[in-house]
Each structure stands twice: as C-alpha cells, then as structure tokens.
Image (cartoon, rainbow, N blue to C red; front, side, top):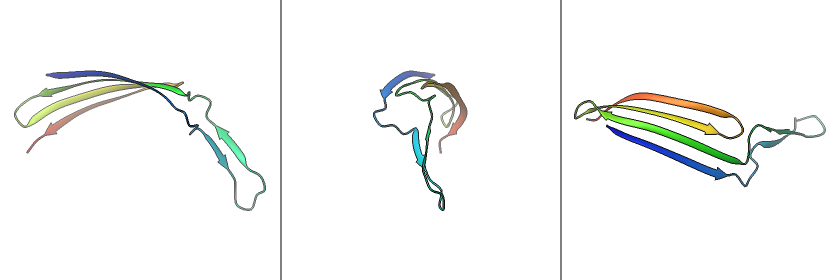
Length: 82
C-alpha cells in the first residue's frame, strides 16, 4: 500500500476571469467578471495505490480545490499492467 498527500498554493498574477465580449453587428462591448474566483488558490490532494497482484492495482485520489469556492473531486480506478 502506497499513500500520498500534497498541498499546493499559488497566486495568479494574470486575471483570466475577466472577459471582454462583443457581438457582430452590435455597437459596444461587455465585460464579464467572475468575482467568486480569487487570486490566491490552493489544492489539497491525497491518494493511495494498493497492489492487488503483480499486474493489477487499485488506485484512489481525492482533491479539494480552494479558490473562493471549494469543490472536491474523487477518483477510484483499477490499473492493469501488461
């Protein structure tokens, strides 16, 4: 059984969540901004890898993303080596 845990924190210097739009045939532009996203973000991730046999493993991961909103992804998978 192998287990891992990691944390990554970073700061976004660019502003990818502000978008400027315009439509063909219309005058003017519109700016959209996602205020829920923050410049400082963090990812907390944990996982395991359990070898069932020489060729078959069971792997799982869970990751939580914190960036003004919090959401979690989880995966469970089998790996077969041949």
